[in-house]
Image (cartoon, rainbow, N blue to C red; front, side, top):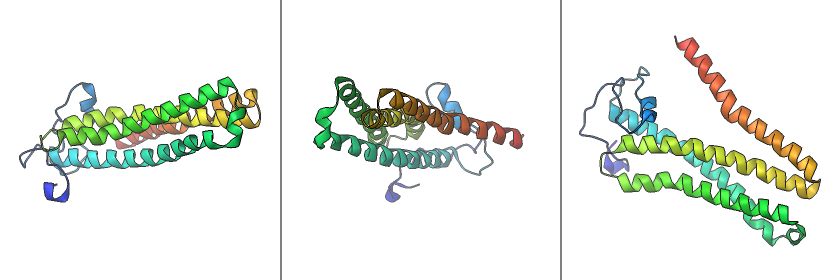
Length: 191
């Protein structure tokens, strides 16, 4: 894509076919080397991967913004003063984690800005690919921690622990196990 369209080009025009490698640090760069049958250059593949990652980050950013907004309103509620020390500690931890996730998600944008025009899209894609699963895992913790806090205030500590653990298990199944099962099945069908 050209710079006029708001997209950074990663190289000098032509690149290897879709089976060509993507330069980048570490073994993580290998994820983008597979030939998936598309007739695209390395630069086109990197641009597509970057666009797909941006979509993932947008979804995550929206979710964490809503969750952070909810958390930030709690101290202004009249019942907040009734929280015990454990609840306040968990609350403050959740606010810190939500802020960290926001910073982590936005770091990809800042990384893009730092690398823009330097023809280093492979580096950008590689580092963003590492940021996304880290941020996703932290979102799972904030989600289950928020569930714990709400149930602890409403029902009690034991119920909160049970429900938060269940929420964490559901997150692990939906965000880890299910995608891995689908991936494994898709690979078998592909062969």
